[in-house]
Image 1: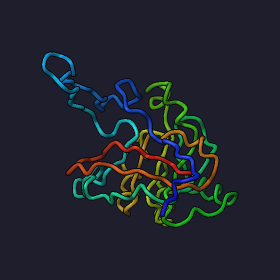
Image 2: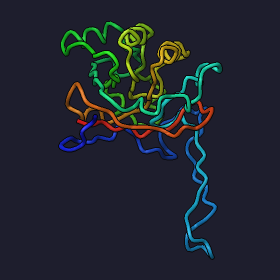
Image 3: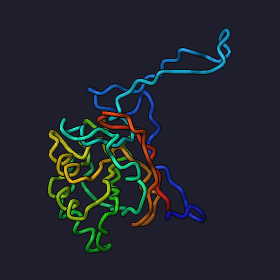
Length: 223
């Protein structure tokens, strides 16, 4: 059971908005209001929100990288709730894939990542969010090497969260390693520097959108 009393709750999610960093192939959020409160007889503000779920802080579904795998409605709704390890890494500023050796070196100093923990990768890349797509994406971002993904599979990690747009670079190998072994992926998290610890709990969930390749999430850390 997660105890809220006496703990700090830290939001690890970016605000989703129309000018946030985004791969140019994706659609940024659009709010189309078809009712405005006070406009004639209208009693409510009502809108249609159009967006690609792989923008902002989001979770991928297995279907995202394999058409034979399940949509977001097949993912355990409680997967984002539970213990987590914050792995703080000093890595190159741009365009770097975190390796198994990076994770093992962190463990030598901080202790082993417990089996079935979520793993929150803190590299500082979230600081570039305000630089827009040029600084956050185009100059290269922090991702995972296949060796790191395979190592986290041995840990049976519940989910992996990182501060950039993707765990992969130009292919989907890491996505398939992780999600093919039941490990969820959360991308574009932030505020990990505020945790100040190596272990916490996470809280979050998501709508069950049938057939969706991903979904926005509101992920929180309890410290």
